[in-house]
Length: 124
Image (cartoon, rainbow, N blue to C red):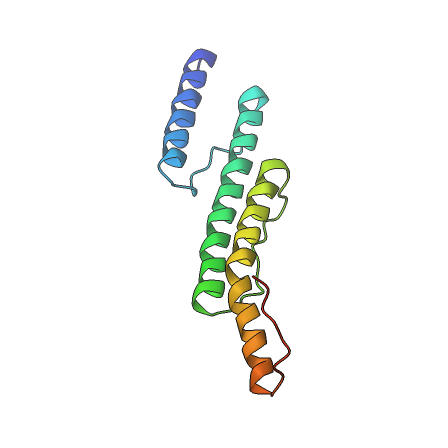
């Protein structure tokens, strides 16, 4: 197959995969057997989409564990998170901490009162 034709097919597949990711399909991948510049593009694309897929799964999991199961000490984790990826993780974890802190603080004070300790205060 002529190189121009192969590049055109690669470009179409790249576009199809980019549209899939834009539409929220993080299962899409580009072929691992591409070589040269196209191979490097495919590798980078696949790594980005894999991180998005992992982040999406982690967000679903942390939502269930913290929100439904009440395990308020659990936090989001993302392997190989660097740069803004790590910032996303830290932002979500900070949000969880900020949201669960009042409930934990209230439980601490109510528990102390239940044991007769009326000296405990709740920080606002």
